[in-house]
Length: 466
Ligand code: 5AD
Ligand code: SF4
Image 1 (cartoon, rainbow, N blue to C red):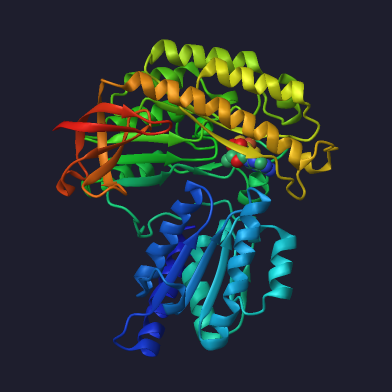
Image 2 (cartoon, rainbow, N blue to C red):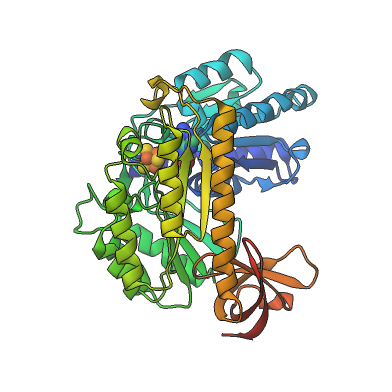
């Protein structure tokens, strides 16, 4: 991989020179749009780092761009439809500017049928590449600039991790830090293991180096990313697991918060929960996707835990972290799920009392096991169940935020809120809190008194910066 990185650095200089030759003193402009999860956002930042090193500057309007990069998501059909809508719109831009380079990358194109569809139906897309080869972007751009021909690389055999490139950071307070890539779990509904390949962890040394760098740049909130961070370290030569990694990052000097996602309940250990409890920099927030509260459905989903095991984890987590905020992902209308089984999800939600939920109606994904299962319940019916779940969670969230009233929370002020003169931040438990304060407080930790709890967010008053 080291050789490959060196090769790409050569392509990077070549592209830079070629762009200088074509554009002269004016910097070429790139428009990068990332769809989907934080993992994709992080990939997008890594690609922006490479583009920036080639000499590109970033624009928010695709019409101004010399290069457009769509970093796609395949998790549900709706996500894919949005991407195709976007690609369709670009045809006219390419017609007006034949030198425009259009790149489509990410999870979606890692599927054969999508790659073929783009090849056949969208001839104006210049570069198509998958999730395993994003480090080869300099080579792709060079080839596209140099030959004008289409470049395709959706290789899925490369499992090595390219290190050492500059990363572009979209913010200056919160940062994403990938600790591993891929997924080995093959939940029966999920396309991720097919498009992102097998699990592979970054060496702890690389992660610590990046975390220290982020802290030295002034970042105050670092989220460690992986499809299943709890299996971090498997396959590495060093003796490490996620709990140990958390402790190592916690030991880095500085005032910052550590978050992580996503944890798979089957690999969530007491060792990890103890590490969370003991590490003062780790946010007391656990995102632990349950997907369903019914044992038969969980088995069909291939989740490898049951309701009881999940609830006992939650019980232990709350024992060691009484203020812990827990969030989850839930799929409504998995193939064959009955209303009675869905009611088990409702009762689990009632029992756990989540801070918030990410809820999804099941979407069939090509080549997954669940896509072959009979799915007799109509979309309309699933929509009703979905609304029932939302209503329940709305009540729980409102009850939880009501309990925050009159209490003081440590909050990181992150940005201006929509209301003039107000800022928005989040508590350790990931609840959004808005309060009137001067802009120069952004980036500081503050104590905020909650004065008005709303359904999902709370409003408050600044007590002091800390
Ligand atoms: N349909 C609906 N939701 C899905 N998710 C993953 N695959 C699907 C699918 N086919 C949801 C899961 C996962 C989250 C990231 O997306 O809840 O945890
Ligand atoms: Fe998909 Fe399951 Fe892997 Fe999460 S753990 S990415 S839901 S297969």
